[in-house]
Image (cartoon, one colour):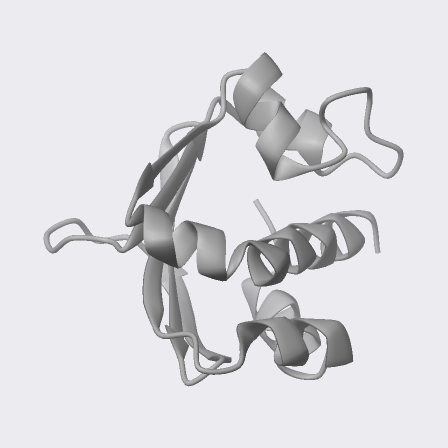
Length: 122
């Protein structure tokens, strides 16, 4: 799907992500089509991004068909794909897990999606 090393590097050097992710500890599972990716966040930094090997819970799971991910990560997204929240209301994105974690760190999640978009179109 993406160059995950670039995603990690960009996020950990992005001022906006750093501010919004401070004190965030989370295991995030991205389900993109048939593929799954694990993103580990510790103390506001992404420490690892790797294929999800199964087993163990995630604090947050974001799932959608591959075509919806492509629309979300398009250089100029269509309406309701500009942000994860409206994409979850109007398209097939599903967000599951700890709602307090999701709400408290939504600005960091939103910025991470923007970084995914930048890397996808980079």
